[in-house]
Amino acid sequence: IVTTQTNAMGNYSITAPTAGNFRLTARASNFASAETPVTLIASQDTLVSPLVLGAAATLTITVQDRLSQPVANAVIALLLADQAVAVASTNLLGSAEFFDLAVGTYTILVTSDDALPIEAMTVLVAGTNTENFSTEPAASVAGLVSDAESEPISGIQVHVFGTAVDGTELFRTATTGADGRYTIADLPYGNFA
Image 1 (spheres, rainbow, N blue to C red):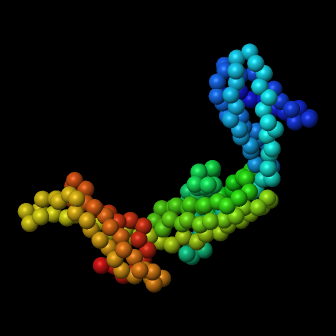
Image 2: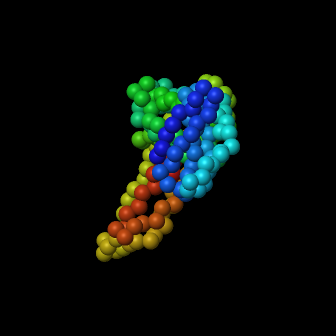
Image 3: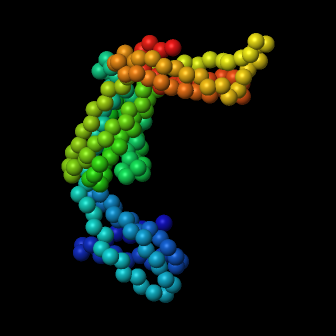
């Protein structure tokens, strides 16, 4: 990695250790980064099109449980065009902050122990953005499938179906492993068979 800084006019020069194909990235505080591919040829100067840094967005996410208590150590992933661009964990106050993001539509994924995963969409605009999430507790069903001689059976599909407490109909499937065991995780509370 070779780095440099721009001068007062925004110009820069980099001497690469070798010719080849590279990615040129420009970053600055309070701006969204810009990136472009560049091919360098030995003993030849390469002029690159201007890199335009866009307006930056910041995002603060707060995660609470259903009793409005902060959820620490929840993992939050931000995806832009199905590519992960940032991952952070919430602090003791249940908050995580992301800086210098490009404006656009993001998918937010929130996971935490003993809670159902959350997936949401948000549109970030230049400046400050906030999102608040409330987790729902998760349950799981686990067991063993065996034959009449108590030998485990692998490859058996086990189904769970029923109604969550919010009225959502649910159907999930798991297949037993070589040891005959199965687990169906991330179930909401409810009545299942």
